[in-house]
Length: 97
Image (cartoon, rainbow, N blue to C red):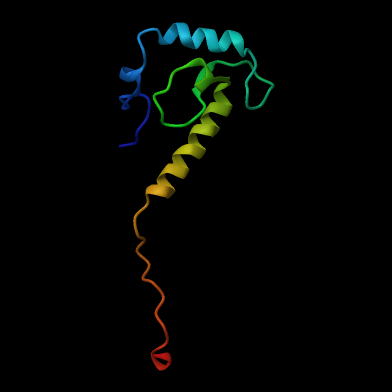
């Protein structure tokens, strides 16, 4: 099953005053900090997969930019945690041994 907001435990780890912090970030940064065009609608954690919720660790971003950023971060995480592949390592030619 895919890990997403509906299956994640992240929401339960948010501080009790999360909505207040979210609102403050969006008011301080009304325009997306990534594209600089669309209005900010999401308080994004600048450093991915952390539970740091201080204002300096958050940025206001629009939904399309947040989706792209999250997809890049998830792909990088999957690539870094990937185990050995199914392809066998190259062997020296038997005549070269």
